Length: 278
Image (cartoon, rainbow, N blue to C red):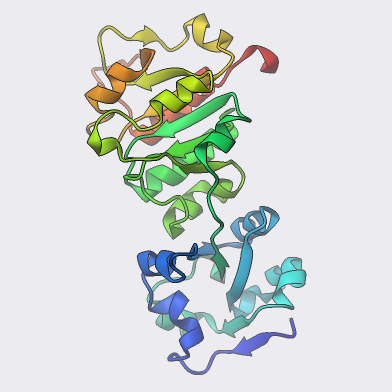
């Protein structure tokens, strides 16, 4: 690590991205080009690097330097800022999770059509605004047979630090992008595009006339889009009306619904099944 730099001055401008800029500011730092995000823990950083994200610098607790050895091709090319744990805590204002952060450059997101052309099971999120839920949904999508994730403009950023952390880096392992338009303007943008690409659209909603989640029609579908809505209110009525089918997860003990992250895991497990994966 020939680029290791001992931190002695908290006011070093190179440390602004770790200590003084908000996540919104990091996202916009290179506008109109994609901005920066922060990845933490060796596992998450490794997954981002494997996915081709470009590191800009590392920030490490001195006791965690050994973990950086796995990233030697990159640490030899970018700065590695190092200090004792207490110094880092004072700099960032919080406990560094496992003592390792990496600032990375964002990528240009692909067009939705590019993603839809190569997948058969896709999760679509309408205005899911909580980063923790976003991270959990990505982790379930990656683990439970979803091929990609599409988001409306009102969704939380999957590359916010908390979302990345909760996802355990799976945001780097599954393709994703934003749909054109804003779901708050009416039905989910992209419904027509999903249909044009041959997808059966299934909305997850609390409707008495909904179909059972285990209906064999869904497993038999060549292409299927599983659509989930915002925390609390769920999907908009316009989106539900625009979908081919509505599905409800059966509840017991008087519980009316699951948190969207929990519901996504159930939905992806069942609706992600298809003949070629039997």
